[in-house]
Length: 117
Image (tube, rainbow, N blue to C red; front, side, top):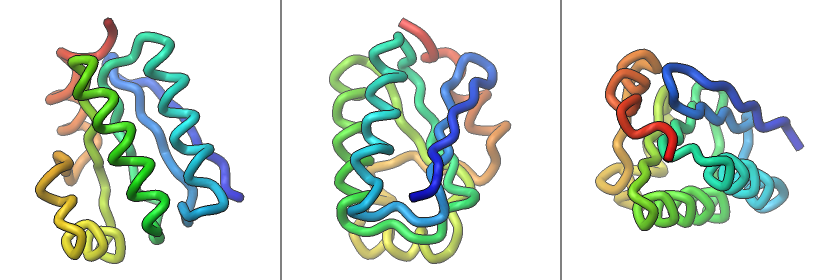
């Protein structure tokens, strides 16, 4: 299982999942996001720059985190989505649900106003 990295930039919590997110580690990714939300972070940016595989469990974890944040007046967005992951998001129509950013700096600038409760 790869490590989930957490960083903070411009008031935004940036979560970086490992190369593969699947049934073996999706719950851990969700737990990391939950901990950040519990710590008061309301803007979560999931940086998929090093992720090339998301299975249905991983997609479910991201949707669940998205719903929690929406309920709590927060936001969750995705950045640096590679082509394999983009295809999965498109096939499941989740590319219409999540805000997708090409560049981390663009995402941080847009999300920075909604960073901490």
